[in-house]
Length: 150
Image 1 (cartoon, rainbow, N blue to C red):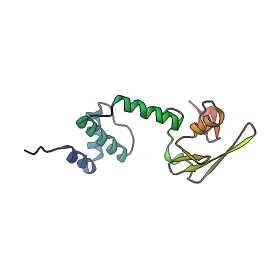
Image 2 (cartoon, rainbow, N blue to C red; image 1 turned 90 degrees about the vertical axis):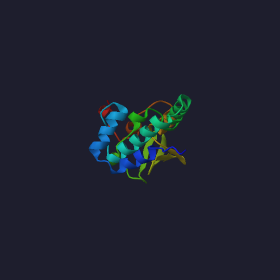
Image 3 (tube, rainbow, N blue to C red; image 1 turned 60 degrees about the vertical axis):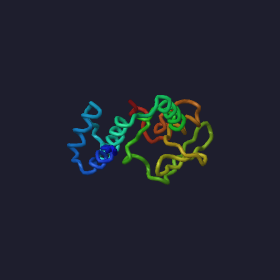
Image 4 (cartoon, rainbow, N blue to C red; image 1 turned 90 degrees about the horizontal axis):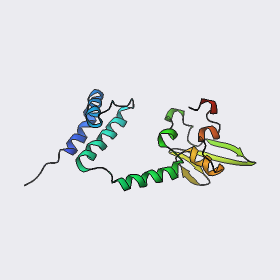
């Protein structure tokens, strides 16, 4: 006796669904209003949620471990450190900051930043490594005015 798994078909159907249909599915699966993000984001989150509900999600200890690793790499809350792609400096841009008489150079990469040959996902993590204290990386490197911070 063969059982048919409907999940692959549901995932494939996301590609041909209208945006309105995707938003309706979001409401059903998350019980919240869909975020104002692009279609690709909606599709990927819906695909994950469909599989999570059918097959089970991550174990709590896995989630905690990922959060700890994220903190180590990013130096803070992902929601706060996330920056819109259209305001991100172009890959290859060098950010230079003098701190306590020492010049620090960070290179913007396609997926984050590089400092001292090591990849970083956020400027805040680099600023924290340099200063030993929490900083908004964009403020530290002069990319955002401190008074604009909320």
